[in-house]
Amino acid sequence: MSRFDFDTFIDRRGTHSSKWDMMETLFGVPAEDGLAMWTADSDYPTAPCVSAAVRAAANVGVFGYFADYGAYNDAIAWWMRTRHGWTIEPDWILTTQGLGNAIALCIDVWSDPGDAVVIFSPVYHEFSRKIERAGRVVTECPLAREGDRYELDLDDAQRRLTGKEKILIWCSPQNPSGRIWTAAELRAVAAFAAQNGLVLISDEVHHDLVYPGETFVPMAVAAPEAAGRMVIATAASKTFNIAGQKTGNLIIADPKLRADMATRLRALDYSPNALGLKMVTAAYSPDGALWVDAQIAHLDSVRRMFDAGVNAIPGIRSLPLQSTYLAWVDFSGTGMEFDEFNARTRDIARIAASPGPDFGKGGESFLRFNLATTHDRVSEAVERLQRAFADLQ
Ligand SMILES: Cc1ncc(COP(=O)(O)O)c(C=O)c1O
Image (tube, protein in one colour):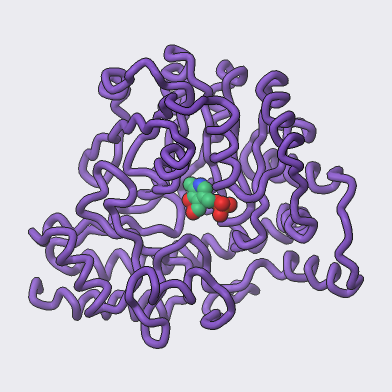
């Protein structure tokens, strides 16, 4: 029995929670009886050690300027070494306002308007949005679907390049699908970036929530030969459910790339949120590690429940996750178009789930369901989906 509780639902309706308070506006699903299973934050509280750090700061009661990144950087270095077998120097770390912001900064620093950025889809929808908002062009390379698994097709990707590409944004583990890339695959991606002269941004924000029997390999560990073109983006936000703190990191071993980014951060007068820094420092600790292990056991249990219930509906397939709490569910076997299975999920099951087409090519027949909630809620979601698609039984 875990000493941590992931089965008490925290009702965040009316608390300025994007996940709950925006679902009616964005999905038309009212929060009174709807289930919010879209954006990637969790319905249970963060680790007690993180809340204790916030309480300690509140007890001081003065929220002035922050100084001394020593403990913060050391905590990150400790976490990467002990959880991921990756040794970093504390001064490789540059702090951003969350990871979305980190990705946008990378696009800004290492490309110019009109340049292109490579992504492998289906992938986190904000990559293409950020590329386009910055006046750059998306070079979209679809992953190959083989049964329940996505595979890389770098020959196909090579054929799609236009010659304008400056950056490759990689997602590892992959959001959506939870695919964990092997060391050999990561080396192949790094070699592809080298061959095409691309800065390689590896977004590893989902690296901690990895299911038993699976092993995550950081890009920097798999392909040290590409360190001169590599930027690793990561954060404690998903792992510890502290996304609202907007604290993310770019970890850059190469001095030239690091100087490029540091110069831009100084020009923009970046200085991170002190509470976020304190929360991350508390999170990346032995107590935080115990909580993460307990969370993985919880997620492993709820995703098994979800998969068993959803896969019992003829034509619907939840792909087996290697990592992440984001179930990637394929409705293609129902024979329905996106509008129909999406409307049934939204209007009959009253579930707000992320639309697959937002994730790019290959997402057309999918919805993504956030499972970071209680057993009761996941069980309720399964029952609602079974009712909404009862005619397929
Ligand atoms: C792969 C990936 N990168 C970045 C982000 C955004 O991170 P942040 O909330 O720290 O901006 C997310 C959020 O879901 C994500 O899944």
